[in-house]
Image (cartoon, rainbow, N blue to C red; front, side, top):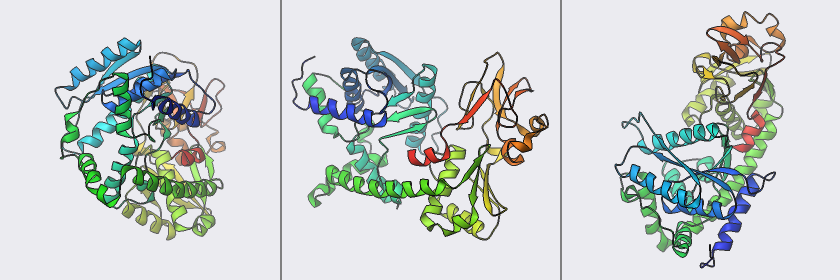
Length: 415
């Protein structure tokens, strides 16, 4: 393919550098999933990754919200066939139109794609977000009175649901990507919902145009976001340093009470939020009022529960354990259970992973050597038709290995 547009080389270099920064131990070619809606951003991402030498596996999610979606997915499939790229269309079922439809669709899209990637042995997925998306999100979060986390921009990469997600075009402008597509003679699909001002993002997009006379442009907001992200990174590093003195056993956390009370309130708040999200798999932190109530309870020495996590004060420490009612139900062996537990061992028919529970703990006579009762009750165990096969957290198992993915400290640095 020729390079008629002079920005091609710069785009390709920026894309390679973005992925290399996120994956320093790996270089192209390697297999990577690509989310492709057919719009300009995702089409540019697909072609750039393909040209950069990555082995692309494309996926389109049909949310069933627009009658044109099936035909658009078929168009993407045809483009991928022409490039020799495997393509799959996933379908979202069971949408609840009574809530925030756009947020539901986004969550469903990520979950479906993660499941798709794991089934195909893929560990990475690239998304086509741009600097324009970042600027629009900044305005949307500003309207919600967001704190530093909400104003620091989208993450360039992160790990969730066992997948490493990438946004390699986050430094590129939407119009520059369309210039690239025009220069290559590549078409794209315009989603009519991008003009529907029922959606907050469309309102933010129009607000960006109205702000230009004040000098508030996508590029200027991009610079502001970078400055805020630098401050966010410094606080994140300080929080990770505080987490280094926290104990971790059987998936439970122990935070030294004296040290916790000595930390600045913002570091303490961030550490508690990180613990809740690490244990529960929650994408978003609890509301500010909920966090204030939690911190007041802990300051007063009272137990509390928030976000599927129990907080207890014992022997000079805050003990955090998973709330039994909140743990994930049984899953087939081989999947990440309860958002963070990875179990490896002999596969076999009928095996599933579920909480150990009281009946399982009763079959582990030396459980006290492995952790507290509260923690072990919600630890993962392997079951077959109600019979305990293995409890790799609560007792020694020769053939079974369990690990937290990621560790608490790594979770903080990655989020």
